[in-house]
Amino acid sequence: MSKIAEIADLVGKGKSKLVAKAVQEALDEGCEPTAILNEGMIDAMAVVGDRFKNNEIFVPEMLVAARAMKKGVEVLKPYLATGATGAMGKLIIATVAGDLHDIGKNLVAMMIESAGFEVIDLGVDVPAEKIIECYKENEDTKIIALSALLTTTMPSLKDTVAALNMADFRSDIKVMVGGAPITQEFADEIGADGYSEDAASAATLAKKLAEA
Ligand code: B1M
Image 1 (cartoon, rainbow, N blue to C red):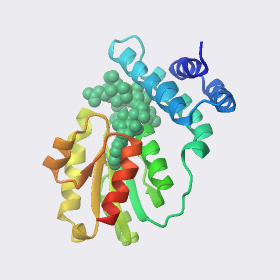
Image 2: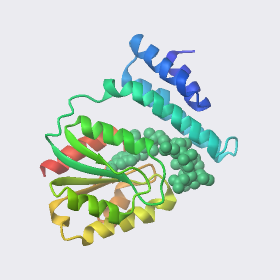
Image 3: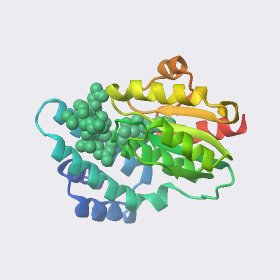
Image 4: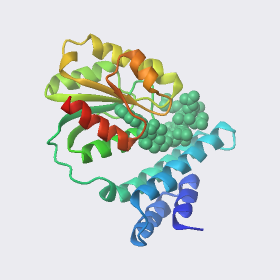
């Protein structure tokens, strides 16, 4: 089994400590950090999701797989994220109310930070009021970035963007959205300024929006 296949297997089984060790070994062997992330970990989570959908595993197994991936990402972070300066300005990021998924949001935050932003991460299950309150404490914020990972929290994303669109500071910020069920079409429909599909393109989009 290749090292990356071994990582995918360990993530799927939720073996946190062994994942961290295997990621370090893969790096030492010269594996590309992005290949470790995409093929070793993100693909493994897709398999976990499919197994959940097929009732082969349940929420606790998804949770341990998520913990294992987080351990692996911790080891990988210094190799993926570099040059954090904060010079691009402030960006507030959150997973919307009702949604507890944070791995994707954390990767997006990491890549955006690496692109030079000062990232304020409000975590998961964040109501619109808390985001607005945070903006008021950080009025130099340029972008608000929102994740939704469930079809059932797409309405929550819509409501959050609607609340921001009503705010008196709306013209001073850009709102970007993303997450597995989100599309460009949905982003346009709810009045966001930008949508991106993955963490790397989210960093590119954030730079574009900040410079617009
Ligand atoms: Co949940 N879950 N989950 N889960 N979970 C999914 C999302 C699911 C697809 C699994 C499945 O059925 N196949 C399914 C959703 C189905 C749907 O929406 N119709 C699902 C479900 C149903 C649920 C529960 C309802 C299960 C239950 O309780 N019965 C429940 C809901 C809880 C809640 O949120 N209220 C639930 C719970 C959980 C855990 C807590 C156990 C755990 C999350 C732990 C954590 O995040 N700390 C979990 C997990 C791990 C998953 C899967 C297996 C993996 C998610 C993940 O981390 N993926 C997932 C299956 C899957 O993804 N295929 C699943 C890896 C991550 C890197 O990808 O999050 O898509 P992703 O992020 C990407 C892009 O989306 C994008 O960039 C990221 C990096 O490339 N992106 C952005 C994300 N945010 C962005 C923001 C941007 C731009 C891009 O700009 C701002």
